[in-house]
Image (tube, rainbow, N blue to C red; front, side):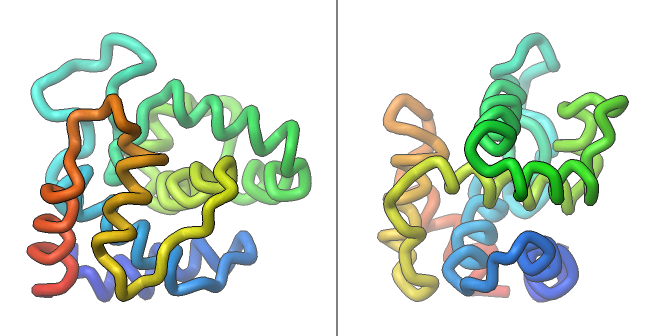
Amino acid sequence: MKINILTNNIIIPTLHTFGFHNQNDVGLLLGIFAHESLCGYYITQKGTEFINDKLALGMYQMELATAKEILRYLKERRPELYKKFTETFFDERCEIKNLLVGDIFFATAMARFHFLRFPEPIPPLNDIKKIAEYWKKYYNTPQGKGTISEFIMNYKKYILNN
């Protein structure tokens, strides 16, 4: 997928729907997209089948357990945002795993909402190293297999070179 198409037709409209207007959000989401799924090449975690809540799904490679935690957080701490989100995208009859894989707007919103749970602001759009460190700390986590250097490499390859 072309980065400008993703940015202008999916990421920015999704962010605006929920009141996020910061370009730093766009940079972080693009970086996650570039690194986690190699720009949509993987929609389920490479080399695995859906066995449990730990399988990474969709273009942002979010685990089902993480998605459930984000929804619980929104419902408890950001009820107005949860209400708008569920009214906009979420049909409780649908399985979350299917929405993460099949609804790019849902997955984008979930990826951004993930960071609402942390007090540290999203780093500036022009600081790839800080974006990578933020991703590692809060998205991939210190226990995750991804590295800051791989994130930077994928960001440069897929985002900056397109």
